[in-house]
Length: 88
Image (cartoon, rainbow, N blue to C red; front, side):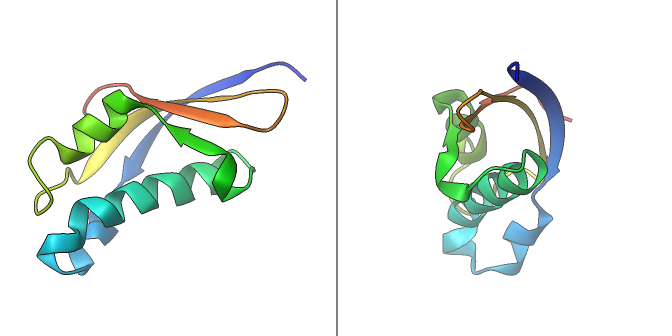
């Protein structure tokens, strides 16, 4: 099985349903859950790149973006690495 690379636009509006001080933390969890589901891998095998982390936390904890473009690569061992691919 070869490495699989895909670009997803991940909606993060569910992060707006939690208290303000928890929104970016929730957005990080949403990204991991989305990639785990769509790349068919366990949640603990999803690794988030620093560029994606900085994109979510760029405006602080209270104002994460409403959606992000993410480039995800799935390796032969089942691990997934995600990096920021630009807005919308």
